[in-house]
Image (cartoon, rainbow, N blue to C red; front, side):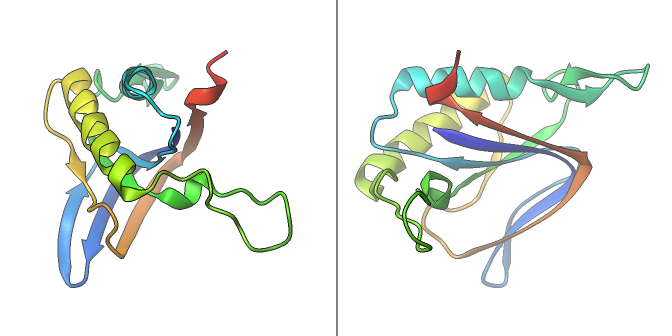
Length: 150
């Protein structure tokens, strides 16, 4: 799994004319799922994301997690994160999991993040044409790949 974790002062996901998700302070997380992802990847990434200390403490130092900051999370599936650009100029999505594999893993990831955070999160809609807007706070953007844990 690959996640792009963005600290935001606001974020929203719109599908057609409907706002599906909206938060103020927290994280907007884009996640790309591949066939090789397992429950271990899900649990590791959920824990890493919720406990990543990227919010400022009273001394204005990034030392507080989204969980400790009582921030919210929007989780959005994005298969294009699995793009390979090694050959030519047209990305290949061969590593991206097909919906029959990706949807159950995405749903398990939502459950794991919710459990780790201790409260419900908001999401986009798998496979939908979404318009994602955000104000990146900092900016702070962290890319985490479960295949590069070490």
